[in-house]
Length: 278
Image (cartoon, rainbow, N blue to C red):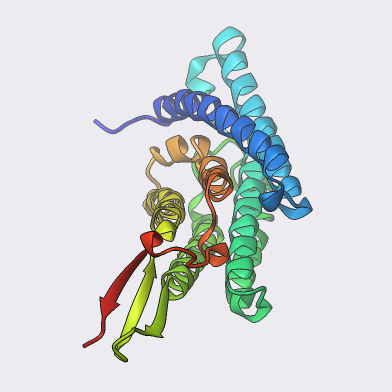
């Protein structure tokens, strides 16, 4: 027996409530860091962080209100059906995805020495995905206004709307990881005249967290795309329980709590590991 749309939507609401509580705690930590650590405090991070929190909060408010109405005023059998409020929540979720992608793109641009050409393709895929999502509410209203899952006619457009941001996340995470790995290895000549590589060990953990937090979001996106493609009702769980706010805020917190790799200089031998190329 398959999972019903209503059960999936209810489970998704509960998961979002839990994750939103976690996100609120992380958001407050990030605000404290942005205030106390002037080095990571700038307008772009402030604006993106606050916009991401506001859109995630509005999304949760709409979903929770829908849950309350379904329990108190409407038959629970209609809980999974699409409504104008849920369409607005879906739009806010896509907007939060875009903000999270742009924040990751900003991080990539900064790590790559503020080279705009590096992020052109990921930026285009992020904007293209958001552009595919925009017409979906009106299409749903014209095809099947109460459909709990994307109607068959618009499934390809829906998939494109989530595959393109997934491509953005894969490219940006790879670019950041590759760049940080590259600048953490400094070729020098040792006292014996042999070429060696200095490895900056202080950058290992920030790099891993950036990769992991990006991977968290990527896995969620990948699973969601697969569920939408096969029109599985379980896609409602991931459509509610979004993780883009948590992933983006984790990056802000981790970069703020430690010196980022691109700002780390080899000042003492205790921070260095020598690797011979011979």
